[in-house]
Amino acid sequence: MALILLTLVLSLSFYCIDVGAAHGTAKAGVGIMTSGIQSPELIWRNLIPVVMAGVNGIYGLITAIIIVGSISAPQGDEGTYTYSLYTGAAHLAAGLCCGLSGLGSGMCIGIAGDAAVTACGTYSAEAKRPRRSGGRFDAKSGKKKSGGGDKLFVSMVLIQVFAGNVALYGLIASILLSQQVWYCGEGA
Image (cartoon, rainbow, N blue to C red; front, side, top):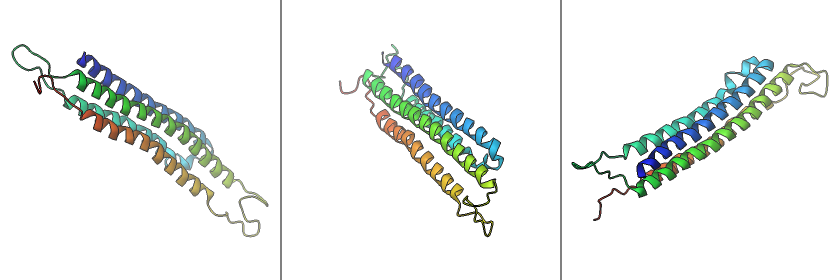
């Protein structure tokens, strides 16, 4: 039964966190391509959401390595397993914690990244368009008023960092949960 929990843990952890990373990458990628039509020079600058979503997949890999590292080979001539149901449940909780927080984080990164990248692209396209008066340009000097595009970019980076923190908190919690180990035959 404990080994079934272990298999469930690894598959659910990877599934959830990778679905979140894929959703974040796809959603932000659509925004990058949409804004790239209007402002191609911003494509490289707007790749931050894609990178942040990809980091979530690494968190799932770290959790899986820690969990797999705590599995011991069967003991004795009879091949009795020392992996207990308690350890299996702790590892299930660790995998779900990391996987579900990565899923939520990836979706947040994708949705917020798509909106932010599109906003940066639209702002840049609007700033390129010449205006006669009452726009973003000073009618007398023809100079651009203070950079709102940079403010949008900084806001996007901050939103992405805080959205990524959700997955990081899940990783930390999963590491703590995965350390709750009890081997069969101990204390008898």
